[in-house]
Image 1 (tube, rainbow, N blue to C red):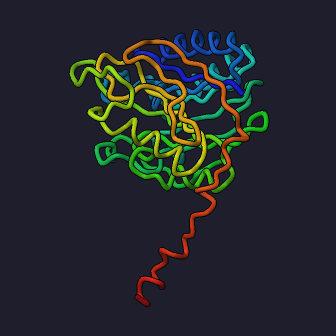
Image 2: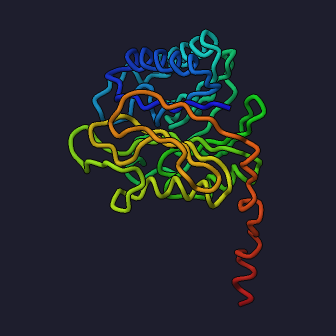
Amino acid sequence: MKIALASPPFPKNIAEGLTILKEMTQEAAGQQAEIICFPESFLPGYPGMGYRPADQTHESLKKALAEVCWIAAKQGIAIIVPMDGYINQQLVNLAYVVSATGEIMGYQTKNQLDPSEDSLWVPGTERSIFELNGLKFGITICHEGFRYPESVRWSAQQGAQLVFHPHFTGSNTNGPQLTEWGNKNNPYYEKAMMMRALENTIYFASVNYSSDFPESASAIIDPQGNCILHEAYGRTGIIVGEIDPELATGLLAKRFKPELYSTMNAAKR
């Protein structure tokens, strides 16, 4: 199966975001990818960057999602689109999964917020597994995938062969100038990507923006923890990689014994 990871620039508004999404999705479909994933909070754009309040209303987001569904059906490719959304009238950070026929298959919320995000979103409370053309996959969003490996292990224990990881690290104003993916002096993010795959024996597909000072690059990691494909730092575009779901056995995740860490056992000792 071919999967595509999009590394777009920060959109100036929700309309520009949809234009970028359409162009990158068309390119991915042209390379026979069956699904494309965009970075965290792509629509209307990551908070704190001057987006209009009008782009964050329930109606604007609902209209944008309908446009994404139309694009998916038009190009015949599934889309994972991270965006803001409302659940019980509360703003959450989530990623919708849209099928190649334009149907909404469901969504995954960001459940473990970074402390700096407590004033931006309400955390979600549930996890989901999705299936596309025989591929089972989960989604973990940014901070929770980097800092809470349990979010990935849960998916692997439910049979996921791949976990998509839309995220945002870096800046357009300042930061390190990275040159080599996974270098020991890089920020920890790329090492965490490798570990999420290796410790669960599944594929891990991490997706970032193409900022001027990225602290990680979009990458596909195989079940042995090897980076099989990554984006160039700061480049706007897509990468398309081929995965073999049969290699994602989930062996290590399935061998995990939660009973060894129970409160009862701790009390006995």
